[in-house]
Image (cartoon, rainbow, N blue to C red; front, side):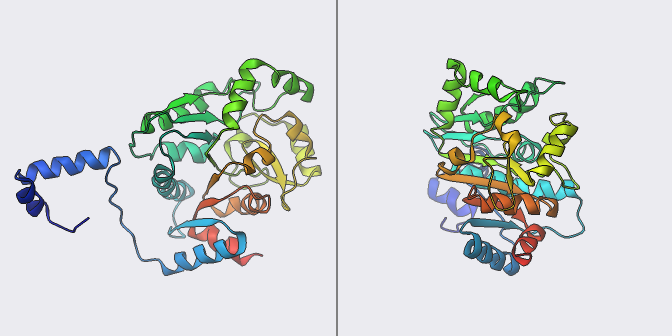
Length: 300
């Protein structure tokens, strides 16, 4: 913090330069010290101000060249998101996690930060007719738990029930009520947005969770995206989207009550879904690439 060289620090601490180097490496690994490169991107700063002014959210724009692959774009955005999440998550917190390709990428880039009495809770079920989804969703949860020294709570239910009445009955079970009670105490929620019509589909749209009748229903209801498998329209409305009666994600009313709601999105295929999520008031902080940020403020 005082901009001293390792040699000067070693002299002051009466130790060797190599010991200072090892201490700094240890501090970076444990999350005590965070050394970051801040490249100049005045355009990104302007985009952040525009997004804040128009949508009332804190934007974190990641500079990404136009010609990179979608995989590289996601990796760069998820790296920034992972560092940001490490700043948001503290001891004695309950953090809600959605599952999907974006959150999986974020989980692989998390720095180590020890916390106390912190819990990560799964926001929505991951099972379908082909798999329980436990392995996929638990892998994401466990990476977060390991990074923060936290407890994790899975939500072992399907992503969608076959009948709304089945979900209502399951929601009365004590086991389910305990998980829902944890979700009601969330301090932070972390999620991405998916879109049923995107050229690059999210995991829920390629993993066998929806059938042709579901897609037809979403099209008839004019759904443009989802958060934790709860769908919404371009204007942010969601209550009468029929598939939501069978979904296991938190209601958007419940989600809006979480103090900090972090959305991570990479690629312009997320544009319609992100705009819908912003219209629904689901986001307090958004991490996105520069191209998506430009499209967000230009197409209003």
